[in-house]
Image (tube, rainbow over all chains, first blue to last red; front, side):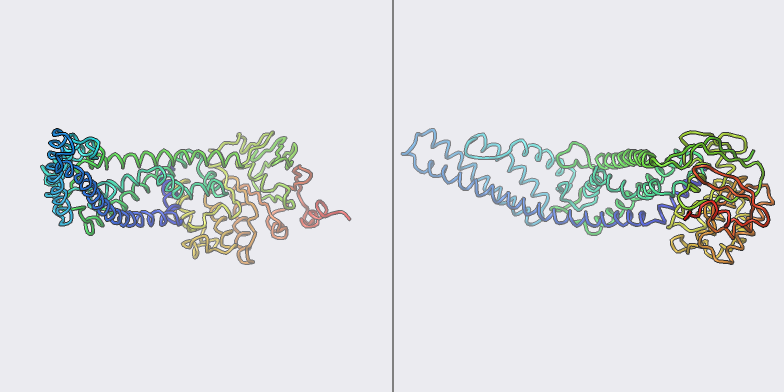
Length: 304
Length: 228
């Protein structure tokens, strides 16, 4: 009985447009997400360039006033002049580092970029301590980045940012995060439950009900078929993503980025985050699908 | 007793369909169920199969209270063709029945052959004509080898050849200890298989056995034709 119902539900899903639509969406979703990530990678590139340029400009302006004080000792007290000279010294060093950082970034020299960035963070910290009011730097963000960059340097990995990466590990983690999002799950539940919903609100359920005495078994078998389909969809979407990212994926600066690296702004590794996303996706799908089935069942009974 | 309805009252969306109605079938035979549209023929068949539940009254099949299991084991019900899944093939519908009722595939194929349904079984139902759907529904009802066979308008959309096939299949069943209750507007065709009728009038079910010279159509007109 259970096997017959499972086969019937699978055939209903496969024969209706629903399965093709769902599988089509899995393929289109993987391709679209890769294209979006590629665009975001370029945008993040531009944003970082702009951020570096903005930092240089701000430092240049602040340095201008410190140079003035340092060069006009007769206009202010000796302590301020001494401090200004020290600030100018560090500002000049930082300016050079900014320049090196920009060059490394433009040339795709990942290792040099990370190394220079670490020195930039140190220099920014010194300057911020010397002149807390005139110089702006987010020391806490720097600290986080420094810890990440040190790890990347030790493990010889490239710098990647979640949401802007097309390399397999980060890209698949990002895509799995999308596939576990409530809105995506809700959409897929609505699509995959179409054969169940239409059957319950139409007359077709009567024929099945007359030929198997327990509607809960039917519900259970439909649930299993839907869950299996979701597994298949996840498999197809992620396999395709892996293939695309292996062929066309580009590093953010340069170098490889493996599964053991931490995700951006999260303490977990990409591997753990990916596994959690998949588990969340399956659990959320199962939960929403089951609730929807029960709602349909009772709504159809009330309607009749 | 094969089928017993006692003191049945059923209202649907405020409209009374049956009011303290009763009917009984004690012998295996073919019976006609006749009434104009909207008088409750399909409703009665749905009540007899548990798809609808009466507000009051008692329905028994084969001396037992109705249950899903009893209906699954003993009753086959040919409903209108909206119960078919248009995106499945006829064969896939039959495969399901074969599996759940543990039927012999060869026996199923034989019945499909008798009703000349084999040629289109592998097509999707959405491509069927009305007659093809009716023949598939009939095959689906016959293959489960029921004790009670309920047929709701089985003759709709059938061409003369198909009508003859169906008639022969029904007459065969009458020889096999099966009770067949057929609801139909095709009184001429119904007369060829039975003289025993249940008419639904005034929210009640009346049983009548017509004589050899009586006509179902004349009786229908006497009961239901509008008085001028």
